[in-house]
Length: 266
Image 1 (cartoon, rainbow, N blue to C red):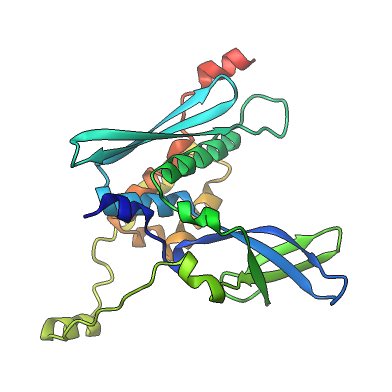
Image 2: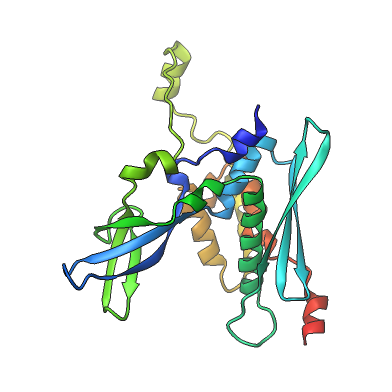
């Protein structure tokens, strides 16, 4: 396996996220317009790392610095060199008030720092070449519709990214290889093994309690976000590898030991 090639490989279309860069109302045509920017979320990056190194051949370390920033070390195991290789990313902790550091501000900075460290290994780096993508206006009910709002122009509408002309730059080409149908594969089509490796009710309850303990005021929203990301109706439908990803994701990054730093800041 060419590790560098696998790290730098483009992502599938359904793995990219989009944020609104700018939007408004055209004075000439009177039509709404929007420019979007692609990005990766933390879980998608972790899925890439797990697919290449498995879950036990990569790790992270997080530090809160005295200059109100967070540094994340992303550490990957090199089988060829037989040693750990480290890249770092740093992001400022941006506070909306002058109060002591909040959990959300640290979480946001840690997430950004992790993404920067991943980019140092080439993960998602090609997205930097995509400055902007025009949005195509759709109805609110359209799947994956993105809300655009411009208070100055007094407009609110929904778009999806118009990627038709730049698909080769954005997405990995999917090559479909047809397998010969055997008796076993036919049986799988008749009785899909959809419950295989699902975590079940007991582990789902344990996970929900962990999230609630860490985020008593936000746990319902956090759980819904995970359900939406993995396209499931209940936590018990999660697979074991997805459960591991969740425990390595943002809500773990926020569990940083910053009590001493807060005391110094105060």
